[in-house]
Image (cartoon, rainbow, N blue to C red; front, side, top):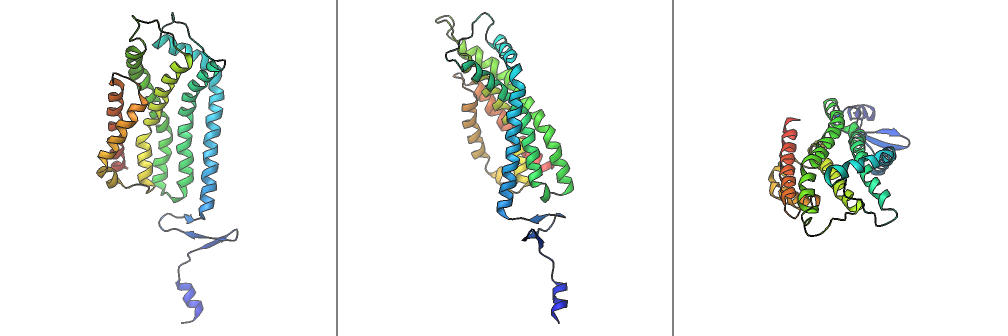
Length: 261
C-alpha cells in the first residue's frame, strides 16, 4: 500500500490555525482542542466583563441607594431612631454595600452567560438552549433569595437581636454595621439561590459526577450547616435553622434538576 492511500485512510486529527495545531474533539461538531493558555486568556477576559458589569451596576444604583437605606431603616429599625455615623466615610461605604446587592443581581446572570460562552463550543445544540435559559433563571433565583431574606430572615433577626435589650439600654445603631447585616443577608441569600444552577453546570461540564454528589450528602450537609452560621448572625439560631433547611432543599432540588436535564 503506498503512502498516498495510507494518508487518505487516516482520520484528520488536526487543523493548522495561526501556526498551531488545534485538534478536533469528538462528539460536538465544530469543537476542537486549544492550548491551555488560550483557554486561560479567554476565561480572564470573560471574568473581566463580569467585573465591569458589577462596577457599572454599582454606579447606576448609587444615586438611588440613599432612598433604599431610608426604606430599610424605616422597615426594620424605626424612623424615630436616629442613624449614627462614626467615621467620615461610613455613610458612603454603607450606600456602596447596598448598591452591591443590586449589582450582584445584574452581574450573576452575566457571569452565567459568560460561562456559557466560554464552554459553548463543547456543547450540543440542546445543551446550548438549556444554558441560555439559565441566564434569566439566575436573575429570578437571586430576586427570590433576596426576597426571602428580606421578608422572613431580616424581620426575625432584627426583632430578636437589635432590640433584645431595648428595656435596659438605648439602641445606638451604626449605619454601616446595620446595613452590613442587611446586605449580607440579601446578597448571601441571592447568591445561595444560585446553587441549583451551579450544580447543574458542574455536572454538565463534567467537573463533578451526579453519583458523587449523591454519595457525599453527609459532607454537603455539614458544609451547609457551617455556611448557615456565617450567613445569619442570630444568637437565637432561628435564622440559622431556616437557612440550613433552605440550603438543604436547594441541594436536593439541584440533584433533581440534574436528573431531569
